[in-house]
Every structure is written in C-alpha cells, then in structure tokens.
Image 1 (cartoon, rainbow, N blue to C red):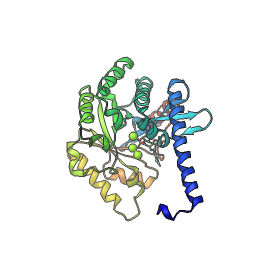
Image 2 (cartoon, rainbow, N blue to C red; image 1 turned 180 degrees about the horizontal axis):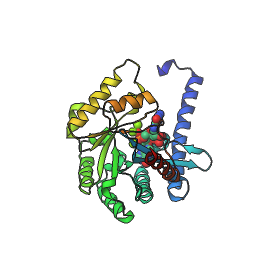
Image 3 (tube, helix red, strand yellow; image 1 turned 60 degrees about the vertical axis):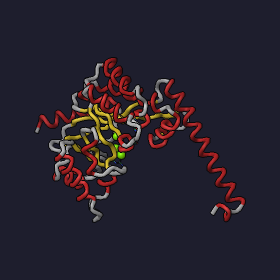
Image 4 (tube, rainbow, N blue to C red; image 1 turned 135 degrees about the vertical axis):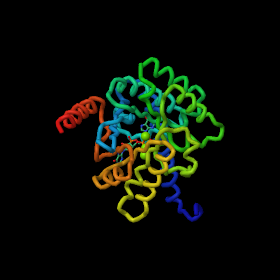
Length: 280
Ligand code: C2E
Ligand code: MG
Ligand code: MG
Ligand code: MG
C-alpha cells in the first residue's frame, strides 16, 4: 500500500507523523511543567447518585488541565502521554492527594479516584497510598480506586499484589469501563474488586434493539449474585435512568444527573439536594 502513495501523499503522511510526535513531546514537556506549577491542574468531582432515592452517594475525582496557551486539554489526550512518559505516577499521586484533602469531610460514602495500570506496576504504589491516607487524614473506607480490566490482567502480578495490599488498608476497588476489555463475566469472581462500573457505551445503546439492555441486566444480576455493587456510567436520558433503576443497578453517573464540577459547586449541589429531599 505504501508503494502506491505518490510523493506528495507520502510527504503529507510524514508531516502528519512529525506533527503528531511533536505534539506528544510538547504535551509531555508542558505536563511536566504543570506538575511543578500550581494552578494549571485541578480536580473536578462528578456526583454518583444512589439509584433508589437519588441521594449523592459519592463523587468521582476527574483531573483537569488548563494549559496557559492552549486552554483546557482533555484527559483522553494527556493521560496516555502521561502513561507513556512515566509522568502518570506523579500525576496520580497529585490527584489522590488533592481528592483526599478536598473531599475528606464531604458527607458521602465514596470518594472515587482513577488509577492507571501503569501506577500499579510499581511495587511502591501501596505504600504511597498508605502515606497519602495518613498525611491527609482521609478515611480509607471512604476511598475507592477505579482500575480498568488491563490492571487485572498483567502477567507479573504486581498490580494484583498492590491491589491486595491497598485493600488491606480498608480501601475499596472498582472495575471501570466494564465490558470494554477482554475479561469475561465468568472471570469476575477472581477479581478483587467491590464494584463494577458499566461502560457508558452499553447505556448509549439502550433503545437500539442491539441487546444492550439484556447485557446490562445480566451484568447487574451477576454482580449482585457475587456480592458486587454496580454503577452505570454515561446516564444521559430519563429512559436510561428509569431502566437502570428498574433492573436494580445501585448507582447512576452521567450528565442527566450532574456534570463533573469544581469542588465548590459540588458543595453547593448537595446543600440544595439535601434541602429539597428534606422538604419532600
Ligand atoms: P472514566 O474514569 O470512565 O470517567 C468518566 C468519564 O466520562 C469522564 O470523562 C466524564 O466526564 C465522562 N462522563 C460522565 N458522564 C457522562 C455522560 O453522561 N456522557 C458522556 N458522554 N460522558 C460522561 P473525562 O473527565 O474526560 O475523563 C476521561 C477518562 O480519563 C476517564 O474515564 C479516566 O479513564 C481518565 N481520567 C480522568 N481523570 C483521571 C485521573 O485522575 N487519573 C487517571 N489515571 N485517569 C483519569
Ligand atoms: Mg473512572
Ligand atoms: Mg469509567
Ligand atoms: Mg468510561
């Protein structure tokens, strides 16, 4: 195929590759700087709602980066660069410390923080989490770390040892984006997690006659049978919320209920929500 490309087409390809590599290099350099300069990085918190009564049961911490020249850069762009460059360890530690400090006294059951599989490869991970819990005063029972299926399928076992050690501290784990990886439903019971988060692609498929309702119902039933909680991601419409509640999904997360918000706005939100609930 490459042979059939004309000279100019090849030049365009090479240019694109160059600019891609340059963009990555710039992101890495600027992210390194952002980690040393206060103010560029922040954490937003997306409320997680109890499906039964819409109480705010928890929040998920999501990192935000406001680049001084380029504005907001989405995590889907800079997290992969952070993972490849090794910066993810520093970034992950910063987010965990920030979330524990900010949300320590919030009236929620769960403060969820995303953890990259790359962080779990380092045997020092569990000790770092223990130190952060100590230095921030965060209750380990309130903290839930979100990992993806890739973190549970590494062959050398470092991830699983880290997870076991952190669970011994009382911290819970959830399996993020469930259904997008390679693990089968029957392997779920091997995983040392407390919750599965059903990927938003299934929720987006509701009403399209592709079986997504049946798949999600099966996931929720199986999770309940083996003692795991379920959270549905990407709930954007009333009918999606109604269906998920009808099948007994435990928690709902999505733009229908709340966007990820800066800390101050979350605090306002549950003051309002609690006032409304008290009034009804
Ligand atoms: P995730 O952990 O699955 O987080 C949920 C993502 O879905 C967030 O995107 C959130 O804004 C988005 N979302 C929430 N509700 C809806 C909805 O109703 N519809 C749609 N379309 N999207 C919704 P965000 O903040 O851009 O983060 C993307 C991903 O980046 C996260 O996916 C997570 O994998 C990663 N990420 C974010 N923050 C961190 C972090 O601090 N550390 C690590 N390792 N990864 C992070
Ligand atoms: Mg997550
Ligand atoms: Mg997710
Ligand atoms: Mg997701």
